[in-house]
Amino acid sequence: MPHARLIHEFRRQMAVVDRWVYLDHAAVAPLPRCSAKAIGDWSQQASTQGDTAWPQWAKQVETVRHLAARLINARPEEIAITPNTTTSIGYVAEGYPWRSGENVVALGNEFPSNLYPWMHLASRGVDVRIAPVADSRVDISTIEPFCDAQTRLLSLSWVGYATGWRINLEEIIDWAHRRGILVLLDAIQGMGVFPLDVAGLSLDFLAADGHKWMLGPEGAGIFYVKTEHLDRLRPLHVGWNSVENPYDFSQIDLRFRRTAARYEGGSQNMVGIFGLGAGLELLEKLGLAHDQSPLGECVLQITDYAATRLQEIGAKLLTDRNEGHRSGILTFQIPGQDPQTLRNRCLAAGVVLSHRGGGLRISPHAYNTPDDIDRLLDVLQG
Picture 1: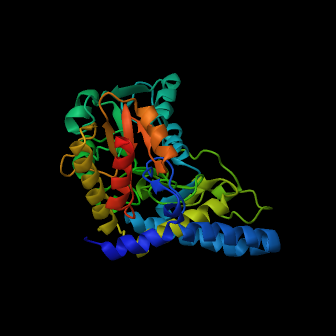
Picture 2 (picture 1 turned 120 degrees about the vertical axis):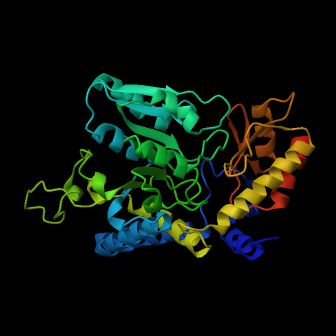
Picture 3 (picture 1 turned 90 degrees about the horizontal axis):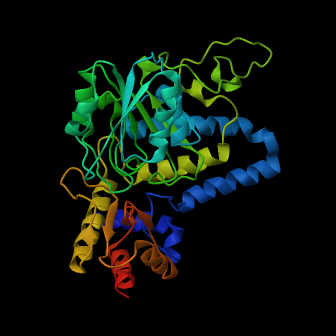
């Protein structure tokens, strides 16, 4: 099997395989051993050293920032570490200098976190245009009818959470920019698997939580802001950590940091950040970079295998496996059977998956093997 050594090395890090066939990374990932260790080490330090270890922790936060920047070919100054995707999207939605009558375009099949922040702008006179997605496919023809001279921003997901369609980023971003439209990318279902070059794409904003494919705990995510947009957004949740001299508490001077860290506001979730950092470091060691990803190749191979095996037992695929748009998400139905009942059966048999998009959704990572898929099929046919 291609990348067999990588899969073996990755699998050794995943303690979850001792008990579960885990096919649910599009929901919440199990922590690798290295992330669990990073969290445990922090807990030990916090209990035995208190804040004497804080300077060391602050340096480690910057290490994680650099890791995140390398992953997407950004500058560290363009990265803020935030609690979650919702927070990052909110920084753009509420911080952009909207004028009454302007509009933002989003997709109708988005996860709620990439819809509600835009819908909330209606009270500020912003027209929120939601483009319906009938068959999971998203391309320029999906969004073009909803954009006009007053469209300021397009917000969309790299990979659809329900059925796994992966958009052509270069095509859509180039199309939007030629019309003066900025692009915010919800990258949560692609980061940690596929290469992403924000500089090469000239992407404007990116939001992604770390608790899915990046193998971190909940409560630590990434917000990318292109340098030229730093002053375009009005900072929200301003605090001591937002300003140029954050540790000089006696000098009150509201001059914002010249980096995306201005959005971090106050005290940070150190333990969550360290767990995320360990996950990012593992992914980097396994070969994930902004311009290549053997992990992505492995994920596509295992989902292709799953698609073939599922069709052999008569499953109906709800995910379009179009070349260039496949992802780590595969949604399907077993005709005549209730998805929730099947999910409960799978969980009882030690197989973890989700009920999404009108069917069952599996989302294996690169450490999953054909044996894991075969186990799923055994349970479904049982």
